[in-house]
Image (cartoon, rainbow, N blue to C red):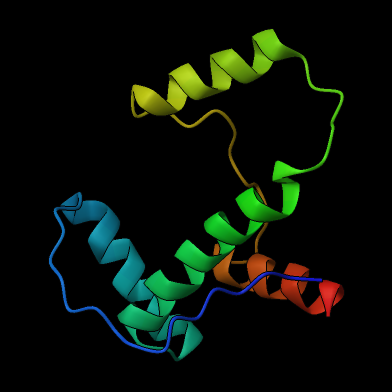
Length: 100
């Protein structure tokens, strides 16, 4: 089952974010017909939900590969790239639908 974290109240905040990423996020939100806030909430829920979902699983992971991927992310590099024609939001939604 998918994990969605809802707290009831909304937090008004400000963050610093790469301007190109921000522009791309706006475009995706428009394409998906949702607000930018909703897009960010969905992205955060996906990341946090997966972390909680898999935190208790014992996976056969090569620790060296995992360490290398984490180091790449810490240096702003992408350890892998989604090559689908679908947007990231559509991929997340499809994954979420499969879990329901």
